[in-house]
Image: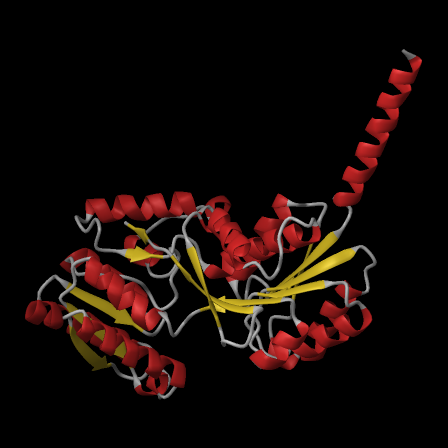
Length: 364
């Protein structure tokens, strides 16, 4: 009896010791501050609440470009902590790679995931364990395809000269045109007054207020409208509620762009990161406006998704439950966090640790 009792004690002590060891590591999460990027900051906050003893969330200076050395020092300080096993950087800045290089030189055991940073992809792939970003160009194919499924016969693309001077945006526009025409939709390219050339966003927004009704009168309600600029979304969605046309996605696909302002949503501070609740509010407003099924976006912002998803991936790799080379395991983790399928494409065929994502949509 004594031997059995002693054996039980030894087993429990061993179990508690090994279990404590498994949970004793730290994961650093790096985001911009709330004032610079709300989504990433809230994503960092969310995962800190989920794993309060594991996560160390730090924020970079609000003016990153002028305080780059401070930012690099902050990231390096995470690498100097003995129990730090992984560092997740969700910042959307370039100029962070030197900090990662220094960490990897001193602590090659530390897992580094960026989601995203915008340094040179080939250089990043040499030092970073996993890199994630949104597949902005692929959306030139997925957005018109979705619009067509939602019943669109015409696809209108609103932009302006300084945006179309950006290679990525002009390539995406060309892909939208090609995809629309392949699907039998008429593609209409409209240039608005340029908000970055003198008079600000006022003339652009006024143009949209006046032009959207003209276009819907010409092409009918089975028209999809896409705008390349964030401030455009408030007007586009408000007009969709009024005129009943299709909005397949905003320039930044998230429930919190355009919908709250256009719909007058009152989102309490404690509900700011509750996207199930926010999506339900949008769905109800769409129903009242009789535009159900005509509005869509991604169910959660990538800025909020990336920190939590990356932490789960890092935790799984550290625990030996995820192989960082197994994109199927990684995509299954993404689905659990997003609640929908998340598709991963290699940024370049030769890079096996740099992936671009597209998320399935929610329809209101």
